[in-house]
Length: 352
Image (cartoon, rainbow, N blue to C red):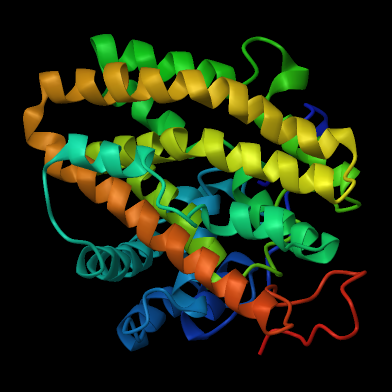
């Protein structure tokens, strides 16, 4: 049985529809979940799967579909699929390929403080996409960026919440304090997912949960999949905490640039508010996360330092890939989405 979920503002919302497949692995998942193929199709897909492109469209969508069953599910998909053994085997194969790619793309280390110093120190000309949007972005670039980020921000902080029962004492107290703010500090209108839904309204975009899943390329999916991967595996607690820390440390300057970019483009205040909220909140979160969450965890379990560094670097690897892909598309006059949004200039060629 599929149950209705809640929208960011707390009202009942139908689960999103299953998206179209992007290759044989995701096709098997879509067809089985949609009732168009028998369960044995999953085992057949596992044996035939080409895992040589773990960051590609097919594998990342297959993973996203599997993970989404632990969040809100899909329309017409029975809730029992969340713990289906054959689907979990397929997910496990895809996860191992994903993790191999992440480890191959990151250097192993255990110097957490050096990672924090690097995150806190921006190189001249740095700042990634937020600086590009502040200095060069047009309104259609901004709307595409907001559509990409909706996949995470409409479930903001949810993947990290899986860390809570795995923490104890000082790091747990610090972690919950940060999550409490992310979830509105007792005020539903201040829940960050709700603020982002209001931002989408202000930008003339649709606020529905996973509304832009079909539009999002693998680089976008991988950023969210990373958090789900780390959150769902207790053995990856250190990596989840590292990725969480990197987000909180880098958020204030990036959010400040995004607010400036939106104001330069004349965006409604509902758009700006989401980022100004993060400038204020995350400046405090950065201190709590570094000293109480990470510092407290490593005081209890120093052997997790290597995993914390891995989480930081894996997140930065995928964020860098995401930023490079969007910047390359925009600088060549292309849409960064798989399907351009209404209002995208006719001169902007579709994504190849």
